[in-house]
Amino acid sequence: MWTVIAHSAALSFGYFFLLFLLAQWRRDNSLVDMGWGLGFVIVTAFAFFSAGHFAPRGTVALLLVAVWGLRLTYHIVRRNWGRPEDFRYANWRVEWGRWVIPRAFLQVFMLQAAILMVVSSPVLLIQGHPGRGFGFPAALGVLIWSVGFLFEAVGDRQLRRFRRVPGNRGKIIRTGLWRYTRHPNYFGEATMWWGLFVMALEVPWGWSGIVSPLTMTYLLRFVSGVPMLEKKLRGRPEFEDYARATNAFVPWFPRRDA
Image (cartoon, rainbow, N blue to C red; front, side, top):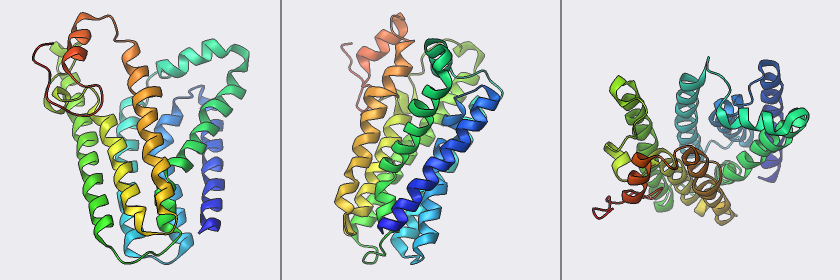
């Protein structure tokens, strides 16, 4: 099991190193976002075939990661390809100045490789051990993952359709899943990793995989997800009204007194 994890780590860092080289050639560090989901698919598939036991739990885990990762990759590439560098990376390019290349290498690409390994830990633990059949925890994990996938995929689709309407330009979406949480896609992504963690509970060391959903939830809610996206919306009356009425992350009914 540990050999599979070690080799997967080497693959993760090698993959993001290649992304880094491509990003410097294109002068666009936001390529790291386009390669994020695909990196999970590559590492999980490598672990699955390296382990070679092809157990039901490992097969299902690979399929779930592939569905999530490939959909996310398609969504981000479709949204960002041909556009200028994402505003977050463009701002860092200015702030970092002549240190932009080494800092991007360490603080963006290599950091993403390390985070990928932490977040994918439940899946790698599953792939590294055949486990005992496909019991209740595995089935419950699939159910939790499905709820998360619904929030992420449907939330992204609703936002895309909203933005296609010319009259909605500059407005805040408050319909569909966005009525109950300001970030259904981020909530969904975190929930999927909680599901994969539950799937890992029946394999040795599976409990240690809790670092995955905890890390993903923390990053999305307090670091790179909600705060960075909402920073540029703060101060706008429509957004402030929306924020008073709607939870930032966990879905709940909107507050009527807001």
